[in-house]
Image (cartoon, rainbow, N blue to C red; front, side):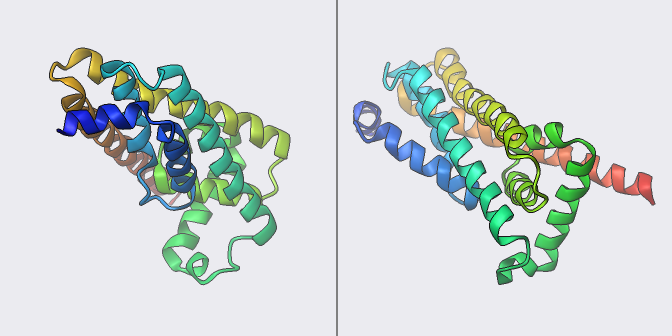
Length: 201
């Protein structure tokens, strides 16, 4: 039953538009499962043959770039303290963290932040508020968006190719693997940030 539903979703003409909307939304609200959607469709591309893996990566990359550029433009036009949620101490600390790193390693920070949900929101808003050159931002953000899309989709594709059991198992395992890798990246980046802070003090 679930396998049939997944197969129908994979061939639906709404599959890629739905993934596009989830990925764009994920750039603004980390609770939206954009990453999981890309991983799921990557798994379905291998286990059911549809949608094509290249299309999954292309659509996800374009959506990720659109979401990131949207955050950049909000930061550029609105700043970092216009709305109440922006003035919360934790959020302002995240903006300060992002600004400090953008000042030192702009390209590296923009690229790596795409793989860390809350960090990418803070970094993209701060990049806009700091008025980082738009052409430079678009170039790095584009590379990061399509690199991220390929990474997420290929996790799903690799799991579907290696783990037997059909699309249901492929989807479940690929999401678990993607979440696990994401948490690991988050932990490593947090520890590095703490070490850098201790080194300054």
